Image (cartoon, rainbow, N blue to C red):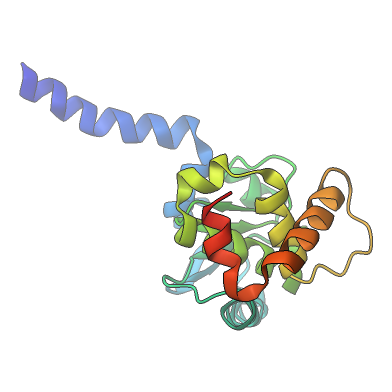
Length: 186
């Protein structure tokens, strides 16, 4: 009886998560009709694949050289349609990083600073851990991503503008060399 329950649980729990916790779908974007021509880059519009590659490569290089080295390259799904993006259940966001499992970019976020922003979140998850990032103050998590991605928008909507400002003040005090050490102590 116990073996049967364990066997049922092994299939039921992942199936339930897949159905009701849509961001979990980032681990298998191909089920959304997305093509993954390169191990880390997927898109629902293969005619835009080279554009996706250029955005990915630029963001990876930028984050590695400006913020910190990414250990494990993130898989990024570039959605050119809202239908693709909503397959992942991400609502009105422009993009999202799901732990260290993957990143999903909406049709309106095919811009270098959006991809950098999400790769910074990926790096935060790698360096600090998923639980720490989830519990860290939002001014740090989001402020860092907006500030260090060099988001060119002069004014963000609130509370994100305040987060970016607060992070910039903190970052000037700690500096790049102490960024991760001080972040662990927040």
